[in-house]
View (spheres, one colour):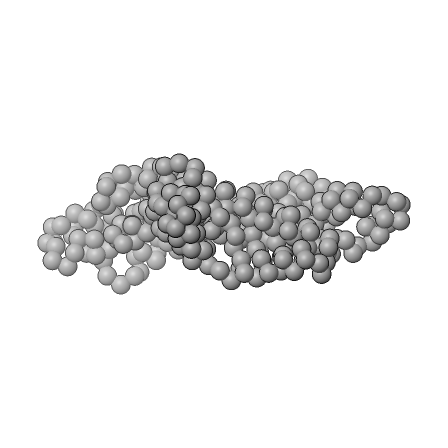
Amino acid sequence: MKIFRLFLRKAGRLLLTVFIISTAVFFALRIIPGDPALVVAGIDASPETVAAIQTRLGTDRPILAQYEEWLLSVLRFDFGASLFSEEKVSALIMDRFPLTLVLALLGMAVAFLLALPLGVLSAVRRWSFWDYLGMIVSQVGMAVPSFWLGIVLLLMFAVWIRIFPLFGGEGPLHLVLPAVALGVNRGAVLLRLVRTTMIEELGKEYIITARSKGLPERVIRYRHALRNALVPVVTVSGIQFGYMLGGAIILEQVFSLPGVGRLFLSAIYQRDFPVVQGGVIFIAIVFSLINFLVDMVYALVNPKLQAGGG
């Protein structure tokens, strides 16, 4: 029952977040200086051309009517059509989002492969070679920007050594370097968290009790301590995955990947307002949905919530 109430509360918060962001995007595009139709048409455009673009954008209608139509369109996942290609914005986004999602998932896999083994070893063997290595990797990984690391990886493994392709997204090899560049930074954050939570769990009373009962050290560390240490990591991993989607947008420009990042950036350059506002809402929905799913997973793996505790 407690988990069900949590589900309803988080679902309501998800809907409220989407509503607030949708409203903010709607009014932000209408209070910025200048007429969006005039910006799209150009300074030398005729009044007839500007009026035609206003009709396409719907800015010639009363503001409340525009706002009502905007909210209904968001609920229908209909963000209008591009001013240049005249394709539906939702179709453009969904056509490119799978590549961005795959890149973020691969980056998350790289982050876990870096954080879990090294974080656990750093906690289990404190002040050893593995612990110092983990601290160095975490510090360097958090200090190096993903886009800079992506450029370095391109120079090393696509230009000098030529193991991986330079640009494009036609095959799996095109995603290896951007996934590594994306995962190292987030993996460094998770590495420190895994190390900290694992050290805390190893110092708790139930671990001392397990050792006094004669349980093998491997069972104590990896079955009991690690399982409880990963509970807070689940929440942080979901937040990091949301950041990875944002980081993937930047890396898509570095590696010339045809994902939603390049779509949104080109829309900003071209001042394609329907694509820009649709992209903002879409990213907000995805980020909110990820946080919602993470909260649900956390509720399922948290022993206190499973038992109905606080």
